[in-house]
Image 1: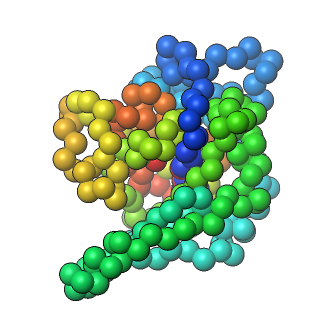
Image 2: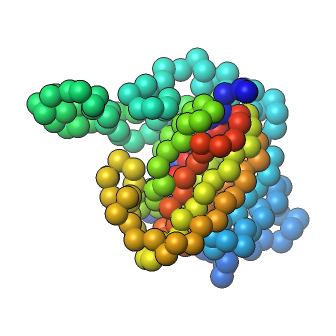
Length: 236
């Protein structure tokens, strides 16, 4: 079975947000859309654009990412573009070492030119405004059997949160929360978010773009993997 990763593109539009309709999806005449955005019945505010990048574009993205330096302090390989981040302390480190690592803020490189066509395409699609373009991206690689705990992306990232799946399809499990909860994995608050017990599984096809707005972005936790194949580069 091949590697699975998620070019999970998490983007933080600075201030302005796109106007959305009742279902959380901007309404456009069909002639203005280059890619068809399809609403998912549940979670509310979730939609998918299939084949958002071509096979050749996918190969180009993967070749670029494979040539970069990956972060390896987690159970999966990750990469950051834009913004800041801090590393995860090893389990066996001393309290002093843990404190030092947690307080060390690292600056990620800016969004690379090799990924800007994806950003341009999202802007042209109307997902973001041109004067409020995404400037932050997290890349997660999930090998077969790997995953991440259910979480909601930090509210500072705004919305929509977009996630691009590469190499293979994936199944993402969504857990409905009783109320909006800003519980990212890093914050340590994700496990304490009160759930309703309702779950929904959503399949993301290879090269598809998952778009989270409204309830899907703030009142549903999502958990990629560990089932599935391919390498999903995500962004959630």
